Length: 87
Image (tube, rainbow, N blue to C red):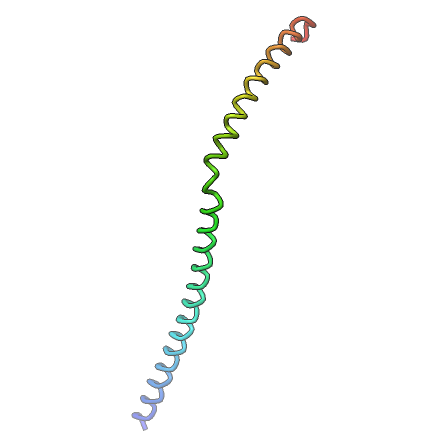
């Protein structure tokens, strides 16, 4: 009788472990698909941002030119404020 109970207990433990291992394997397969999708997305982002440094150089040049104009306008407004005694 004790042998049968031991074997049944061992069988239940083995079945429980097998079930958990199958569930873990399923979760790992799902995670693998998610990681693959993330990797594909990151490759797409890398492709889309590749021309960014060139465009930033153009934008930086335009902003530098704008800075000169804004500084000149600030100087003119400062002199006008002095003339009208606003400062």
